[in-house]
Length: 294
Image (cartoon, rainbow, N blue to C red):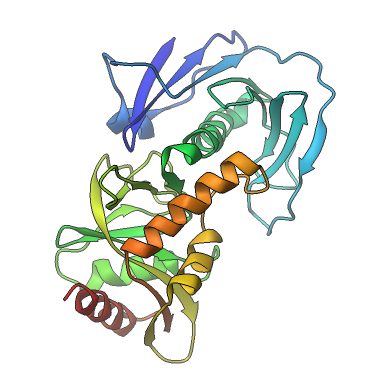
């Protein structure tokens, strides 16, 4: 079975050749499905019964917070290899072997109970790596669409980005959620910056195939009062850098991410919102981002 999807203008293919893995429920991908694709996909992920025996060299094993997905990244000669688990105390759910340019990958699902996680996480990882050189940023953010623009709230997990979106939905008329965890930001050929919905939205099911010009990037910090501060370009770069997916130590990927982040912060206002988890924080934020457009 071969399926095609288009996310933020990038076509990709998911193929099942494994006889051991039941096809998981892929309904979150339905808004992005392309029944009759035109052109070549930027990558193809094939689910197989088993990967060959490998002799990988570990290149990345970052510590994770409790409940966070665990990913280890390796090199195998010219290829890349990763192992993913639902959390650090779970067994490996996905073994993913990727070509050096990330255009082709093979996935072994380790245990049927985690099949959706394995496919989902592998597609998200492969998408981030492959499109990094295509003016694309896969970001850890929550996004509100309002008055024709998209506003991205950035923060570490559990520190307020989804709360800020909920406050906008509650008290800012016309606000709607575009994505709550992994939106896609693209630097368009004319230099404009757009945010796109994706099939990856964390614990909040919000899978909208829509896009908007980016109105602002806002980093959320917990505080005892609500206050909005506009960032300098250098400060804004650091803020976005920490929220972008991709393997930055790889020179080609890292250079491409640098160019995209630099273009984004040069074109779009960036802020820090020090705030309480209340509706007034949303009003303060909304007022500041609107004034930045004047």
